Image 1 (cartoon, rainbow over the protein chains, first blue to last red):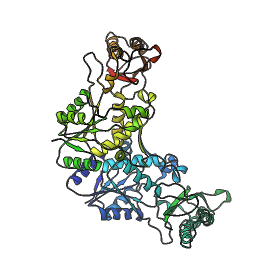
Image 2: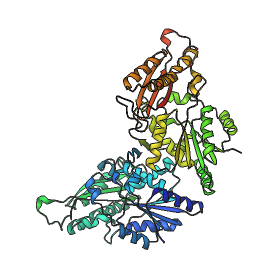
Image 3: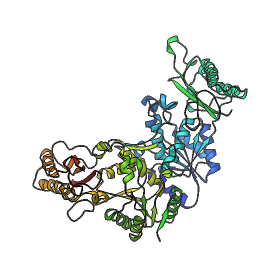
Image 4: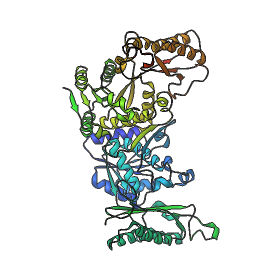
Length: 299
Length: 299
């Protein structure tokens, strides 16, 4: 029997009861539009905990563009059915007014880690994420929370936050699920037209290319990034937001040589290119699509 | 039997146990150097809860001046004895490295409410307060937390934060304890020399004066503030940091007329005035002393 809960208080009371009974509670925060990637997070949570809570909340404060927020898919009935099949115990879908009451003015910031990569391209994004995740943690009171490694920077920022503020919550990262050709699963992949979809594989190929360069003894960051940029450049319908080598813990840039575990993080943006009169089916169906992916390279 | 706990994890486990047993836990956050005012917060907590936790932590991030922080009194043995006499169940005195681990970068901000009054004079002060109180809340996991009404803005900021983030903690304000002549109790009052101590009463007198003006039908903010400033001006050893009429909930300035409950908030700063060679016993023993006080006026 899966419970669906709307109110924060009700969820807190439920979680207190589970904790008091000695059961381990896991939270999987989502924005809904669940796909196999989300369900693999649920699976990770089930292996670790007695009870799994999935939160479904499209968080307005982490969108830079209100059109993106409005357009974000909200297939609640489908999501509920997916959770039921996956053995989720509680789905919590709060109303925005409860998480952001009138006059809300409180924010949680993680300095430093929030600034590079997606933080540079999406000002305020991580502030929105850390603020809402704090609210989700305080409502669900889990022992464990599971986040996807696809959003590597988000995972790093939340780990830092959880340790700094002392939530007493174990933050688990779950490996990225991929389509058969390597493209990381994401709800917006369906917005890619046939040609853009084919070009999107350059991301996975450039991660693999960097790994093979490293395996052949290459250590120069300049050489590795040059090869990565060249490979990404083959995606002619896209522009490169970033392709960088960084320390996986501090997210600081690796200056010259790869010496230890190193994060290769990539963001590629597909823009509808109407100037050349390209068929929408070729490029994008609708708005621009920004894809991110990453791999921690081990020399 | 009073427990003394150092580690955050240990406190979380203790609190989880109390919660699971159905007992109500109250937290009284302090920076130590406990006086009767603190003990009245403990009394308020005891009346409301089954278990009372007092945290003692001199929080570095809420001091603007590291000399102030270094000089802050830390009479731990005396404080422990006072807690024992007051029937406190747990004293939690964390180490700074546990609340601020290496690389800590997470901050909690309450916009708007943190900016006027003490926020204007002490940049970053409330950010330090809200960040450390978040950490204290997450460690002690109380049902109730008690703060003094003397620090009215702090109480307002923390109420906002608790509601916004959804701590599920009831925030109780406790009335200000006063010396026989009306001066609000504070650990640093002892630093006032005889003459400064006498002049400090002007604060209480100006609160009472505003109240009596209101009782006689005066509603003009200009007239009330003029009378308050004149009274405070009699404290010739001090300068006025602020004396303002504000909405008690939003902390917005009351522009022209007092029409509903109105906060009169005052901060007075006594400076060692060495230029006139005044005896230290007259003015200050040591560094400057900043006194704050307030009253919510009901027209």
